[in-house]
Length: 406
Image (tube, rainbow, N blue to C red; front, side, top):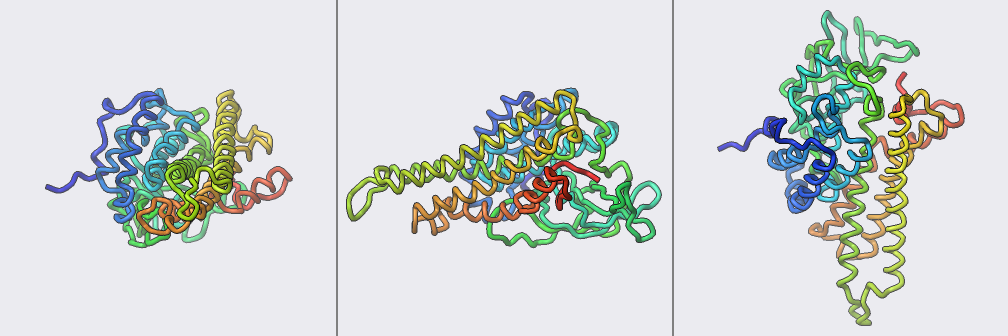
């Protein structure tokens, strides 16, 4: 008998968790199961269907569904903690969970009646790239969509695929109020998408982040959106940056897993020449202490900034009301979480020495995963430049990292 399709094997709405505490508890229960499957997930270069079903059962994909729509409506910090827990089990699974749960955040920018039609249950998974690398030619009733996109994490089990595009009319790019091109995100069904087997990478192999192509597909206007203004939701999760806030959960979960592993290894090792316990060695103690210092500083910065931002947004303010310092306050801790995780894992890899280099060592996989993860745009220098430019009154190279939409 064929294995059930991961796209249709989610729990009934009534069977899923309804509170943040329930989602977190289920994630904690799933984490060791994901750890046990890590090597298999990496070999498959995608999440197996039963792993996707396991993630669905935790409620991770419904985390941002609004309370008035029957969802648990986790805060950004609560979402991040769930992603951190799952990534402690397996970073690729955590990455796909983080990407796939964006559906209700995108839904904020769609009309309410469209949300009801497109997302009939709370565990719908969306994958794809939102940055405008495709072309959407305006036609009556919608667009003709053509293009090729990279980094379709989780696309092999997605219910909808996003495709960021520049809008054209008569083959020429349209311009927005600020004079730049018009950017819209179009949502299409997976059977309208050609996936391309390009995901042969250093790390995060299990995320299935394939390239994909769409050729001259009609997309109704109502299946597209702009981040410029929410249409069906208000509050802290109805902002352009809502879907990137929980991203630090992946590197933090990975770094915590590496630290836990290293501490366990160190406590059982004895120097073969001196007979001295590793745990009593100053160099080892300092290395573990320094890694913990880096982790704690990065983690508290992430959660503290998220809690503060949520407080400001819940009070009725918008991102446009923020001071420059408030505007950059989550972007920089988010980036630092990735870079701190890379420093931590690299240091622990060196500390444990030759035992780290063999593929059965999880440190080898974690080092490759964090190396690949840090190539994501949210961990790049242009985010730092954008923050610096914004507080100095200059021009950010990547304004969307600060939730700025032209």
